Image (cartoon, rainbow, N blue to C red; front, side, top):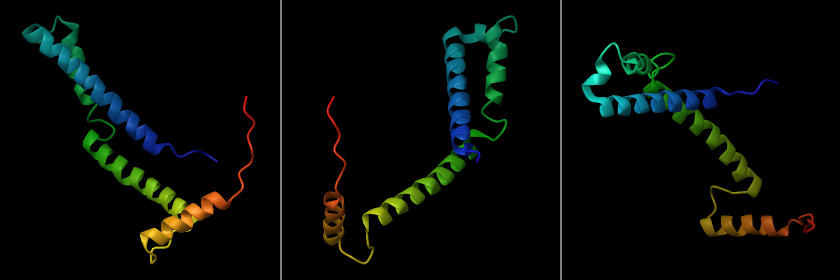
Length: 115
C-alpha cells in the first residue's frame, strides 16, 4: 500500500517557496539598488525565486488545498475519536462527559514497569 503524501507535499512546497522568496526579498532590501544589477548574482536569484511561488500550483491555491484536504482528514479522525468514546449528539454535554470519563477509567490499563 502506498502512503498518501499529497498534503505533506503541498505543505512543503508552500513553506519552502515562501521562505525562499522571503529570504531573497530581504537580501534585496538590504542591498538596495545594487541587488538589481545584472552583474550581481542576487538579481538572478531574485528573478528565479519568485517563480517558485507560482509554478506547480500557486501558493494561494495550495493553501486552499491544504486547508480543505487537511481539514477533511482531521474531521475523519475526530469522528473516530467521537465513536471511540461513545459521544452521542442527542445527549447533553454533561452526560457525554460522564460517559466518556466512565469509559476511560473503567478500562484496565496494562501496568508499565518503571525503569
